[in-house]
Image (cartoon, rainbow, N blue to C red; front, side, top):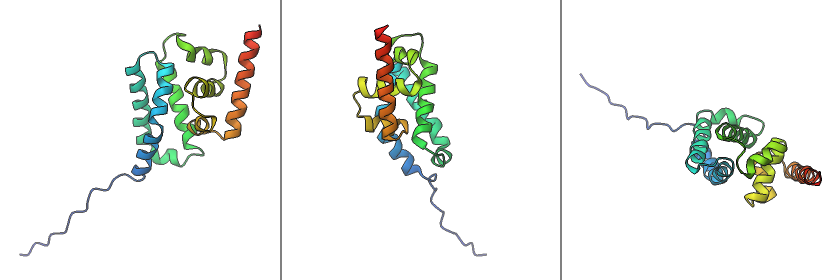
Length: 148
């Protein structure tokens, strides 16, 4: 009896793995800086970002099919940091206590983390003009609070 052996197929990597890795590499540091601003414990901030990205990996293809993947990931990051934030500590929580979430985030990214408005917009999945409008609105709202 002759046994025919077929070469084994190499294990296929999940679809869009390279894109996922590139997305993580491009954004992880900014996500971590944002999480550190909102979460007092640096180790907890790192766990927060790791949780968001690990969860993202499992549903990456579905996220890619969404209207704006960056916006979806940003909402996940904001929600996860919100769950891990204890008490009204830090300037980030003050922003989130008095401004709408998107306004608080754009203020945090642009003014405290010193990211350009363009970079902050890309992270949040916003058009540049929308990010600038949010920033102007946030600055106006904070100015009116100071005037009281």
